Length: 151
Image (cartoon, rainbow, N blue to C red; front, side):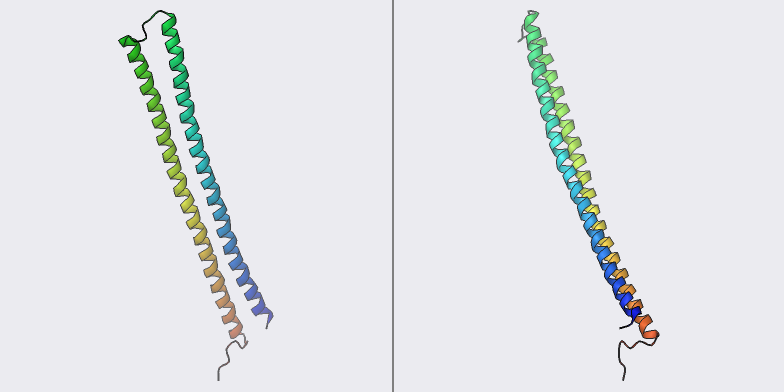
């Protein structure tokens, strides 16, 4: 086997390995994006819990303040105030959950695109490796090497 043919085979192997490494890099990147998505979801739940806890604490403080000033807690104005605070808290939690959902969708799309990019890189490297091997074999044949004996 000639040096030219051996070099072509080594180049082929290196091209195939490079494609596999590119795929593995993109798979790791996609995994990290998935981890980021899970962490974002956990943070969103925590934000919602924090907002609800703040609402509960504020409600207790407001009730205590109304009682301390002698206001009737069951009066329509106090009830309207408390209902409005409850509505605001619910809107805050809903908005936070919606933004978390959008962020999760964005990260899911980014993860899918990264995986597709890795597969495309591997496919491209495979095609280049086979093309290079075919060129090497053709050059070897053209320079007098006997790959395929013709009778």
